Image (cartoon, rainbow, N blue to C red; front, side, top):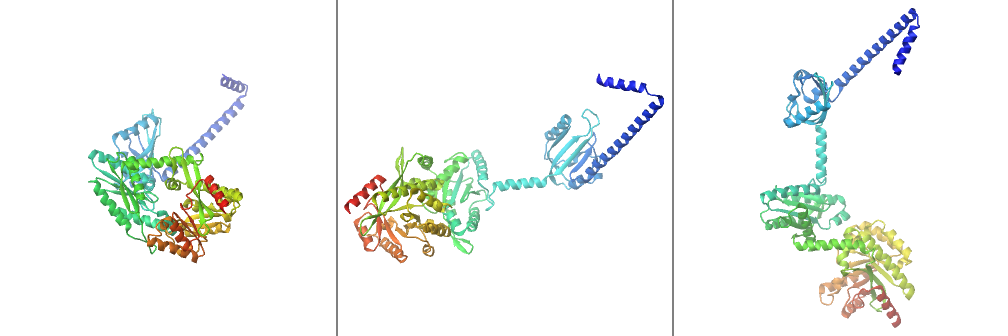
Length: 603
């Protein structure tokens, strides 16, 4: 209604104009129309020119077909990608590019999409003029209204060969270990599941071997990661050469390998492979002009007797491997159901350890260190115990390795250190006695970067003077990373803390490093003390340790002293202190306080 009024209004205005005015207005309108027509023509030509430039210069391949699917035009990009010239394809249908990798249903879906949506795009495999099959990303667009009988179609495509290859490389890298080139744990699960499916159909036996390199971390810590990497590469190659072509080696973890043995004749054959692998791994590794030796533990599980699924098979092989590690170096073990029960017990303990700190289930026991000349208590060793609400007292030998492995040893160790320092300071004030408290540091504790600050903070919190604290490390721990050990010990020593080497003689050490360490005490391991009067070798070792310590101006403490004869022998040969059941076993704080009171009363 409003438009009509405007038009009528315009007519009414023109009706009032004179003839010359109307002629002039008509001329003006005609000029306006002509001018816009020229601009439209220029714009149209410009758009055609731009489209043509894009068509001719595009790196993508472009071709146009008529309503009969005949090619009527192609661009240079098309010729470059396909290898065809324009003359060779004009009048032909796109079927000349067919790779025969797609069925009729695939092409039917393309035509259906063009009819319904006026477009289609996707990945398609086509053939070049030279016969090479290659992947394209293809887009097809209908150029006219879908209801028009005369349709033309515009097709634009890219050669995505490089992209496909890159994706395949990425996938391959994701499934293979970059260091050894072996399939990784991800591919292990897929390959094992595939192998088991075939084994079920063909009634075959399959074996899985899990292999762990013993003390591999020590190699990294002492010789560096380059040496560790070289060892893994050589070991991976040796394992591959120790099996048949139908079998596969995987790198399943930092220091673990897995092997799938397909179509095994009998369990004894698997044992032979395990023995051969152990023999191969026992040969020296020459790395950076240095000979290294590696020891391994192998766990074996067999399908279908040990498990029917790939996850169960791997889990049982791991349980067997753990058992092999417990039994010593270069050992292999077949899975037995009892191992699974042990694994469940271990897992239960691990979960309970996490709760034990919060529930205050841990207890610090104290064992006196006694002067062999005066029989007076001069020091204390703090030893952790766990009073489990259901299982009762649990030996540290059971839960400490688990805590060490999962990292819980760090908060547990800090709790022991804080509790022991606090208790010792309380006794010092109460009994006016210069007692020194000895606390073991685990490998994880000692190697953490902030151990010095942790110790300093605990001493500040408890008020114990540094000179009354002695920290114990094993000689093996000290040699894991000698440079770090030396640096850390110096920092602790500068604080006034005493340093002790525990279980001396049972590990391995370099005397050149040992003399550099700022240590105060060597502790003779109980294994040498127990047979000191009957075993000449133990006697010689104990005397050698005492002589070595005194030559380095160190104090000596003998552990595990249980008889008067042992104590007399140690005293006769100038061992300064002892601890053991002869004087007192490790006892709770309240009982230890009574022991102190009794000794004070008899002085």
